[in-house]
Image (cartoon, rainbow, N blue to C red; front, side, top):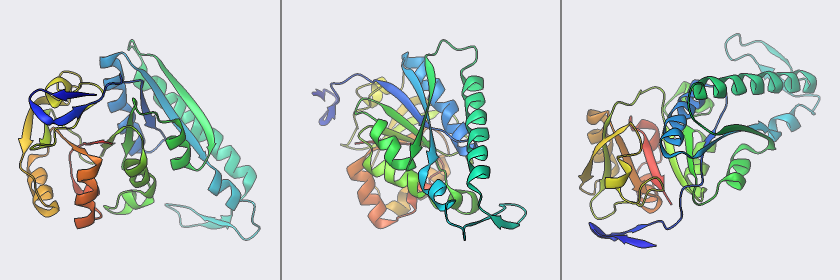
Length: 259
C-alpha cells in the first residue's frame, strides 16, 4: 500500500482492479446499475461480470403445499407452483441476458453473464474479490414501495471485500464532483486517489472535499446538490448509519463505499 502524497492519512490500494461486477435482475434499479457499470468497465478496460442469482430461499418455499403467491399488481392469490416458479426464473434469466447485451452493444467490452443458484447476498459475496468494483441498485420490494434500502444491498455494502457503488434509478445522476470527507480521501480501485478517479468515470467532473458532517446535515447538503457522487470509507458509513439507519436510501447521488 502507498500513501496519497496530497493526503498522508489516505491509504491507496496496491492491487489493480480485477473486474466490474453488477448484481443484475430485470428491475429498473438493476438495469440502471448495469448501465453505470458498463461505462466504468469500458473506460478502464476491465471485464464486466453480470451476476444473476436464482433465489434458493424462494425455490424452497415453493416446495411447501401451503405456499401462496400474490400478484404484485393484481392482488390475486394462487398456489406457489415450483414448476411455474422455475419457468419464471428461466424467463427472467433470458430478459437479464438481453439487458446485458443491449447495454454492451457497440462497445469494446469484455462481458459475461454468470448465473448461479443460492442466497443472493451470499452468492455475490462469494464471487467478489478485493480488487473488484461491485455496482448495486437500490433493489428489493421495500425500495419499490418506500425509501428503505433493500436488505441484500445493505448486507453487500457492509460485508463486500471490494468497493461498492450504490446506484438509484429514481434520481438519474448528472456529472458533478466526486466528494469525500476532509482527511478521509478513500483509495479507489480505478484511481488511487479522488484526483485520479475523476478521470475514469463520466459521472465525475472535478472533486470536492467536505467537512465531516452528521447524517442529517449530509442528507440536506446532498439533497440540494443532486449531482456528482459521494465516496466514503466503510468505517465512516457505519458511523453515519448508527445515526440514521436509512440514510443511504434517501441520498439522491451515487455512493461509493470503500472497505
